[in-house]
Length: 318
Image (cartoon, rainbow, N blue to C red; front, side):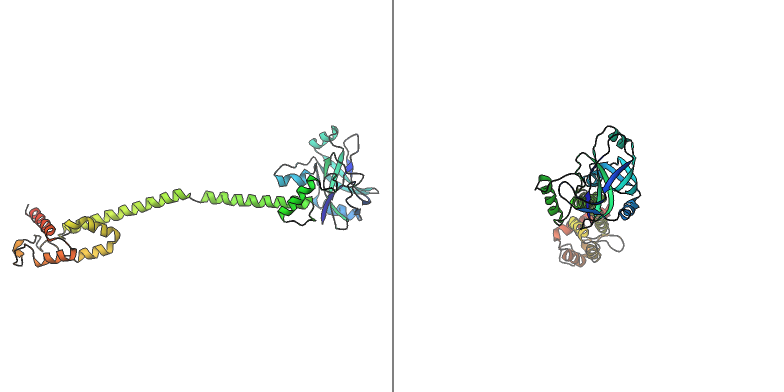
């Protein structure tokens, strides 16, 4: 199914109530396109009025403007069609804008757009346009008069066909439809991107949030490690010389650090005192067998351990 248009001169004088849309029988345009045939006017009328009324615009803006995102207001409406001896006529309901255009004689031609089969048989009327380039005589392919030379407009349409992946037989209406479809696709993609941007946290903000969470977790683990190790030292575990190392170990591996500390003996006696020199094994170094065990497990220096032990003893005596 192809689309073409037929341009006739408007009647002079008052604003017309009826206008001729298609001539009877076979007709062609001055530019050579055609012939087209009005075989069954009643069928054409029935198919056309399925839309109830047909727009009359300016220079086919109904077909052209939507693809470019521009307005395409109707200047009048064809509200009825009538088959006459000389073709199909339309009854026009003009709005204020259209009536003004007619009164001021802004346009001299009317170009109805119609669909037709490959053999030229007209199947329905789609719309009509006010124009100043009547290609009649009888017919113009879509819009206004054109030549069959390779004009700039023809070359543009050929370029558009190729860009849109359309066949060489695609007419201007098919090109405009494809452009409109592409525009809708782009608009849909743009809307999707906009929605994603609204729902997505920017990368910098996400990284900052991650850093905040990590810092908070580290502080919590550090606080827990300090509390555990200091409580163990207070309980008599000989961890004073390696306090910072044990805190770092607890931050990295809380379960492992707590298991290690649990296996260490306390320097406090069951009665609450401390181990002192009289518990020495007899070698004169001031260490008991348990002290030596703590030093070995913790990998401590004997001098550091003795300092810690002495400090705890003095604190207990006080």
